[in-house]
Length: 579
Image 1: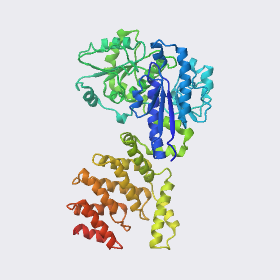
Image 2 (image 1 turned 180 degrees about the horizontal axis):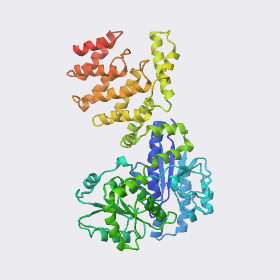
Image 3 (image 1 turned 30 degrees about the vertical axis):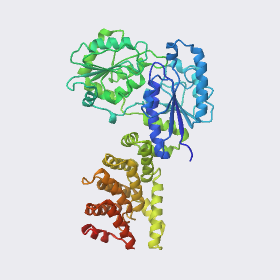
Image 4 (image 1 turned 135 degrees about the vertical axis):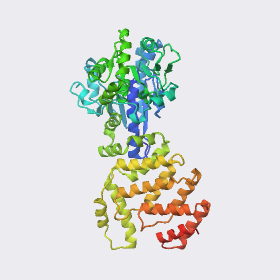
């Protein structure tokens, strides 16, 4: 068996988490899309210098780590010697990976030109090109390295993008590590961190925490907000924070990853304007006061200014601490207007689109479009909470339910019908069936995926999803559609019928497994449509539920052996008079 496709994500980080966080959000979508296309989990590895690799490990990605330059300097080691060693480490590591695709964030040449000797390699290359300062983009080595990439993906809206050196790029939109549908409200936030639901919660952050002035900034902000006895404070100090911690009655200090889903429950926020913090707070509609941190390539001040002009946030200059109390009062007073403007400013999460664009060098556009349409947020959550084996089973099932081409589905069904009807009536022409199927009305692939998610969510508390997928595929093979049914009508009816069948209140978890086994041996009823056949099966199983499963199983096997032509009428009689 050929190996799974292998992707290496390269994220350079020093005092922040921006590159790793953004690439992680995109990589999660790349994994979902390729899972649906290939019906197995792709291998996505991270090669990174971030000092918070737990961010990536928590998302299920293997991490190959080298120290950041910030850590090297803090350790007193020679930076020039580190660069020499790091280059060889990166070259050898990428050479061993034999990857299909290299995805790099923001710095096309790497942090210290370590990628230049690799960009002519045999693998495909995609660059996630975040907006950088003009003076940084003008560097000759930056421009030269960009030309060696197969795909340039801009994680910005075209309206906010400042053209850099005439680059031709594809726009994916701003990337967030959290979806609105995944976020918790104020009640959920308070329950998680032990806050009083009847009092305001203020979120305070200095970005990833590695900035040299993070401790000073957090202290100055906390001195203001803790003076308000009614306010509760959630401090997102960041995984890279190494300064002094503060404790207090109304204070929760948090340095781990995974805080983003809870931000929507805060009444307002005071935060640095790093790419991820800025976009996530606005996307979640949190009334926010932003301040800029100095960065080599990231212009946070410009980012804040553009959002403030749209009324989406408030601006604070840390040099004027005395202005902060009034800004906090304004954020609370105008919370609704700020929240609405923030959501309008960052209406959608571009992570999915950026993933599609990044995968374009190694995957056909029609397959990517199919997987993207199929993988709604609901299906994404189902895949994320499933084991790799179960996720692969779900992908195989969905490939049968809603394949990449509707013509593939119609052709598969036509072949089933033709083979079956040739045995009964050799004179029927297959072309008639194919024409009837192709002219039938269709449901969208997303609708079919949604119906499948409903089935899984109904049953997953009492039944492992691998067994459910196996049962579903068995029924799809056993109950081909009637000539009058469109493919999607046929599949949708099966999904609805199984949902109803397995959600019977009288059956326990153990009995559900027995029920699936009985469905596997239940007779084929070609004269009925799939939904009617499954409804009849439910009536039969209910009529015989007092009998042990092995007795029912033996009775069905004997019935199929002793009756050459089983039909619905006979099964109906057995529903009324158990044999």
